[in-house]
Image (cartoon, rainbow, N blue to C red; front, side, top):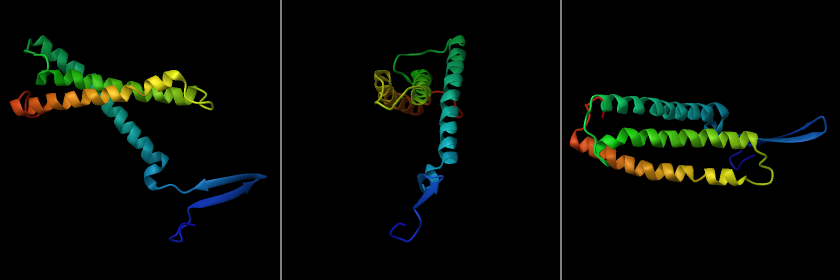
Length: 143
């Protein structure tokens, strides 16, 4: 029991095997974590599909594009979403397919650099989005 008198653990002896269960908060339950993972994957996937289509549409209409301008935002959003999606998929593959009993494989350690790259690109993306908002680029619905 916890200091407030609530049950926090349950010890069982099932057929001679001792099992200890811990009560977790609601936000650590599988349905909540699975729902969050599904929502993030949906956002990443939609950005990986929508942003390139919009950029190709703009390219076909021959709208101007300058380097490090607000027009760079869709491509950066696509790249950040693709990196995040690749990280989640590869991390899941490492966790489920590799033997982690003796430590992380070197490829998994290298994989941990992907979120750092995505974070740096997100900082650049934030600047491009700010420029797009300030300059009135795109339509009001798009912004």
